[in-house]
Length: 383
Image (tube, rainbow, N blue to C red):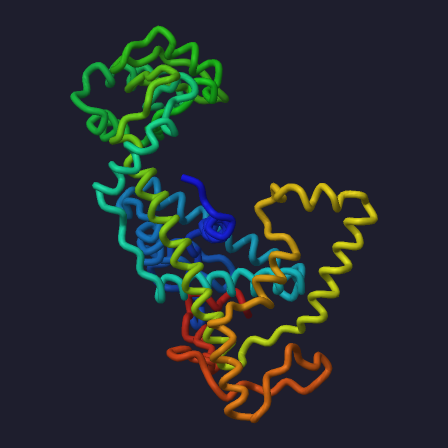
């Protein structure tokens, strides 16, 4: 499925927000250390309730003692780093403040999308139809394997896991028997991406068999082969369904975001909220053209479409200053009705900016009250 440049841009913006992590905040010590505090750093403490909330927000098992201990240790490290940053005066760094504000704006916009745009999950029928129409896109390029990897601190423990694989009735039963160890269950992964030691260990195995223990980067590993698929085979539907479903959902959401923005833009023009200095933008466009001509690339630029996914200056200017006839009629009519004059093509950049009397229907243009002070779990670092 080919995506338009606008949709790809929206998907990239969404991917950027996917980098936000779970909040690691404890409670402020306004008076004394809580009786049930697990750890204290400076004026902050973390309690069992905080740990439970953090683990649940990550979608993990809040009863797992090893996971809870990891969360506490991460919280302690997090607070120590913040304490050191505060000591060095980085809380007042202008560059950090600017980037934090940018991230805050991105999160607010993403929240607006969540509130204003509803996208249904693609149905099974839609997923199957897409898979059938794009079968050629799901061919395995290399040999792939699916594995369970057990990590052990010692050779003897690794042999216990190896014997447990033969005795366990299921993989879940095996993992339950070794809760203090780390296990990785992979999807189908290219053999070329595996460490050479892992490749050698699984080469003689058939599906369902486990390797002998071997040492890799200071830990003992046992690898169970769940499946093996050769290059050139089409990926089965059950493997691709969650991937296709997520892709279709993301594409539909991106299209709806573009339509939503276009609607807001039309309303903003009608109510005079958006004003653009057209001559200034055209001057920038002419400067860009002059630079291109000087470098001897104008002829090439006129003959072929730019391969960059980012819009050119001309495209950006056109999208901003060339509304359709349907968009300009309501704006012109409103201007004539209120002033008796035709609207100007541009505005005086040095003139006084008058706040629009109208508002986008359904939009709240007032400045929201600052509610951060009421959130005691997130304001402790601002002191």
